[in-house]
Amino acid sequence: MAEADFQFGKKVFFLNPPGVLSDVAATLGAHEFEVYLVYNHKNLARYLGKEPHALVFVNIDEGAGEPEWEAWIRGLQSNPETSSVGIGVVTLLGDPEISRKYLMDIGITCGFVTLKIGAAKTADILLKTLEANEARGRRKFVRASCPPGTAEFTVPMGSATLRGTVQDLSTAGMATWQDSAAELPVGSRLKELQLTLRGARILLNGIVVGKHAAEEGPDVRVVMFEPASLSGEKREKIRSYIRRVLQDEVNRRLESA
Image (cartoon, rainbow, N blue to C red; front, side, top):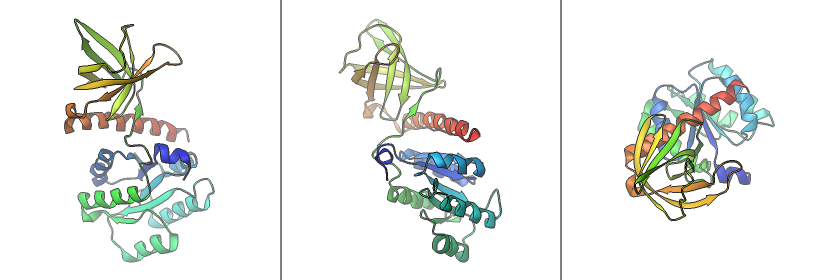
């Protein structure tokens, strides 16, 4: 795997996912894997040429007949631009002959998962598969660049309120621009920091751990969130925002693939 893949991890695509995989995808996201739900196999095949180390789980029950999915998967394997993509199959039908064909004859590398075993067991199998394929890379947290107008923060500073814009975000912290010229030294504790993510408000604490010059505008501050101030509900709100931002970006790229 290339150095960049270790650093940033791999995108994980579920193609034509059935309803149960929405809950499974949320579980995978909670373990900081970068998961996408996609529905256009032709655009995805073209897009994967730019993501040659991605992982794709194909629902062979939907969108086309099983022979067409076999041909689509073999097409990825035979194309030099996509031959390194990891491929798995998900299905509601536990046919041992079809399982043997995909695992032994076609040679998929990410497993043949029968969904009727339930969401919890499916999530467990897929978590182990993603770990085995080093899908997280060296990155501990999924992060997203925040589209303009979707992520802002305020924090009380004495008698004033400091406001700013979130540049990028993970459940561990954020990079920000502040709207005022007030100095915010490294080491500053930001108590009762309020994030506003597409209208959802999250109250937590943070610490300024670094700053660096931006290409344009004010310096960027790097803020780490205090873990004790993050409940499970708050983490899920942040993850939900990140998933939506990343999914929207991939949708745009797929449309132009």
